Image (cartoon, rainbow over all chains, first blue to last red; front, side, top):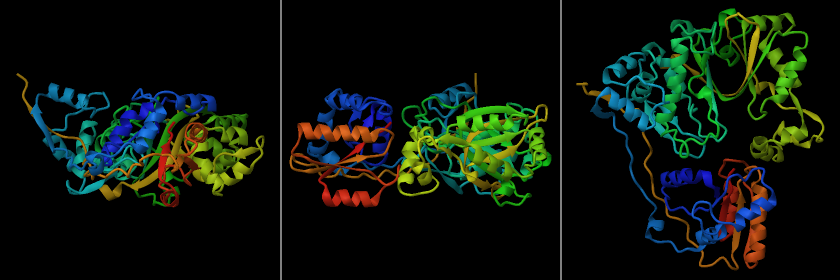
Amino acid sequence: MHTHVFARLVRATALSLGMPRLRSAFVPQPVVDRSAADLRAYIDGNDRVSGRPFMQEVIDGLTRPLDDADLQGQSFERTTPRLVEADTEDNLQRLFEENRWTDYLPITLPTEARVEAMLKGTSHSRDEVVGRLRPTDLREFWEFTVEKVAVNAVMAGARPEYFPVILALASSGITARSSSTNSFATISVINGPIRNEIDMNSGIGVMGPYNHANATIGRAYGLLSQNLQGGSVPGETYMGSLGNWYAYTATLPEAEERSPWQPLHVQQGYKPTDSVATIFFGGWYTHLAYGPRATWQQKMRHSLAAVEQYSPPLLVMDPIAARAFVELGFDTKEKLIEWCADNGRLTAREYWDNQWIQYLMRPRAVAGVEPFASRLKAAPDELIRIFEPSDLHIVVAGGETQGTWKMISASRRATVSIDKWR
Amino acid sequence: MAQDVVVHDPRGYPPKVVGKRLAPRLPMVEAKTVYLVDCLFDNSDVFTEQLRQWFGEHLPGVNVRTIQPKKTWSDDEEMRARIKADGDAAILGVGL
């Protein structure tokens, strides 16, 4: 049983599982927040896809005899060619767009010469398998090689010297085109010497369209994700209700040289001389604040209480603000993170009245997994911690034209070596 | 006249699809044990309860049991084994 907006996805998934005739029944969307009476009306009503009575579809699914096609399932090989049939540049631009291989901004066509040039950005063989990606859990993985990543890097307008960074992102197993209904995007933070080697911008406009490497590395990660995982097509391989502007491009280097704190990758156990990419999954919300001024604690508490608790925040902090926090006694990132974890609180009632906390955390709480079990035991009006220090991260970046910081929805999903892909 | 160019295909490599037969169907649901698998989406427990009540009202001869996996988005082998051992059929649902 599914809700009707997932009908195309259900058919596509059943096909890829070798069971194209899997029996399904569809109620209307949504189920969430509907009363018992509403849901009973769904059950008593018609299947939103077939138009037949819903329960007739359900009982039929259990009892209708199997035919030969049901008994065989469906096996088949699929392949993708190395090259596209030759055509004019205009026609190929149109073809790539019609096939949903782009982000609807113009792409650089991946000619053989351009792909060859991109491949010179790594010592790895073109045929080496880089990894596998899929739009979301429970979908099929697609595999890809160094050459296929190079094709997408060219399309994004990246330069060969950026290619190790792009390969590292591709190797992470984390898609930048998640199919989640929650419209996730990835945010990638680059640390180590590579930032300066490829002239990334960690200064003025670090999160804006003001640097070739920042812009095209993030775009390449998005394009390679959608094309190498088997698509990001609304209704089939993309179900994000609102979508996410961070998905166009969201890559920033940390301003290590101007930060008063340890760089992010060193916090993860890497050496300062290592070049590393850390991938965050989120991009749901962005809060902005200044200071820290006299009332910063109250404002920070308000922000922490206002964020979506399933997607903890990454603080991207201008060096001016970071140094001001040091003056307040936060001489390490860890101290400020601990303060945030201790002061980010909601009543237990508000915490648990959340779709994703209910769906994903409550089963863990019931199973006794901490800290969720303790949060579940709390009285409804008790103020409970909503984040652990390990959920929270700080990155220093910005041009020091303003003492500001942004609090961005971002769960750390992977930290990968860039040096491995040089 | 514009010149033709040759470009690479940007897609990855899909896995082979291996056909799987559907599980045997029941000749009828009467007197059978049917598990309603609540997949833990928010409010799916309410939906499952309504479905259980529907069976009680319309097909009271069906032995309906509700069950939940231990975790979301996971294949709960223990739950599957129990359904296989005790049940004749299972209905999974429901999404958002």
